Amino acid sequence: MNLIDNAYDAVNGVGDGKILLKVKTYENELWLGVSDNGKGISPKEQVEIWKAGFSTKSHPGMGLAFVRQVAEGHGASVEIDSKLGHGTIIWIKLAEGSVSI
Image (tube, rainbow, N blue to C red):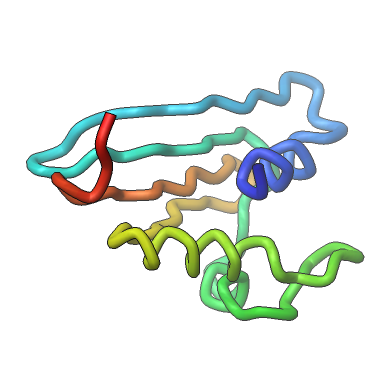
């Protein structure tokens, strides 16, 4: 939910704002992604957003730190691909065997 909430904030006020949930497999991984076409995140902020207490909004700044902690606790990794003015996608990458369906 943290990733969807952040995507919503990014597209809020964007005329053609879109949030997409993505799922794909790559080699031996399952990738879960949340994508938006919002304002994007600067390269400097892409480093900072994972730190507890960092926020670009009036939030406590715990959301993405929590997402990463939970993902890593389940053997997953979290990656970001963002370009200013074009949007962001955050992938949670789960290794084969780390999830059961």
